[in-house]
Length: 143
Image (cartoon, rainbow, N blue to C red; front, top):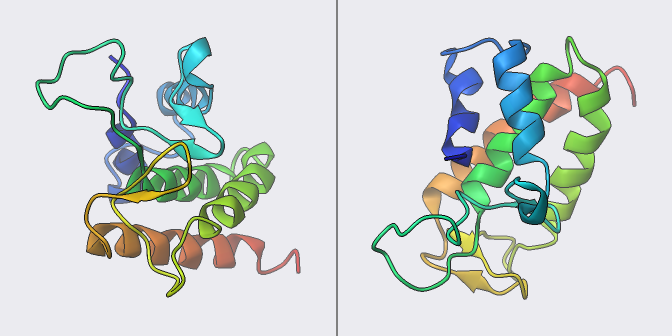
């Protein structure tokens, strides 16, 4: 089963961000759910709850942390595969639009854009900071 938590692998140096196995997985995550992926409206779902009975119940929203991990993974992959950089920037800017009035992020985001789960979510903010730092470094010479 496809699970977007794998996006942390290159961020902790478990696998190279340009490893073909990882790039294939990331490309699959980037697809919409109806095509076997986990990304919808620029947000990343942890896994497809329609395909798995996880025992949690209810519908899950997209995970803020996983979305920021995708941005950072694409940014790191763009060193070797430049095609990912523009998409990383777009996903990052899109994700920023889902913050609340205090520019804080929750754990999850519903399809409606409503924040779900713990707010503010520290893990989401750590992923935001790391993605922003790496994206800034990657785009430094483009600006």
